Length: 219
Image (tube, rainbow, N blue to C red):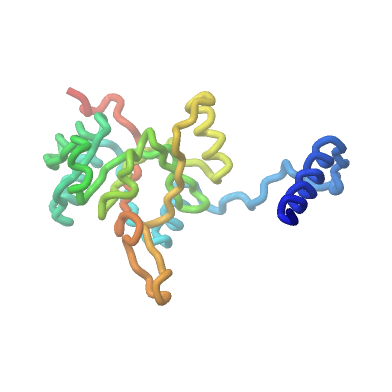
């Protein structure tokens, strides 16, 4: 009975607050000005610095021809195996790089490397915004997550990323939006840092300056 009475008291206060709204007690607070100072460096440089500080591996490519060479080199150097990629535009690039890959969802449990795109790159944080439209669970399952992004996907702040994704999907947002900052890690057990506890232990971001246009990237 006492719990029910306490509940009724809380609900009564909520109803009262909804009916009799009070004036803003802080009318002079500026909610429109930026919270952060402007970036001291260009968005790509700032992103690379913050992303690397968080434990990510940053790779820059001038164009998609260089991206193909980079994928081939990483595959040979890191000895990638069980590569998974579901996005057609990146499947084509992997084919050009002679990197074997799988696209069958039934093989997700066996993959070691997942290659995806992303929504946006948040320069100030060195973070990657992914969604159910882009990552397709690949930011959780594989030991290694490789993200391919383009310079035009860079935004300054998290607020800009949310505004951009709302504009991109015209109000029909993906069912999941997530922000990745570096490889998965935890220190919950005896304060010992463990990499890859809840996701990839390695995170690569390949930033491409220009997408395909007149280059021979199709056919």
